[in-house]
Image (cartoon, rainbow, N blue to C red):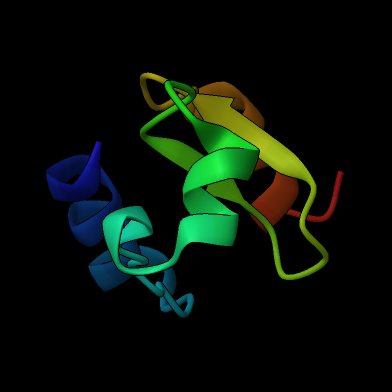
Length: 63
């Protein structure tokens, strides 16, 4: 997922923050096996396990 996001980031210019859940027990507990996961800046899930490009592009376009 990260490689796809980095490619899209170059095109769309969005901020991408990678979080290592193993460094934070609270985050690890919250997500457990739901990784990788992509959330927007408000914590809404956009993709789990694999990148849903349709959902991400709709989000970026403001739809």
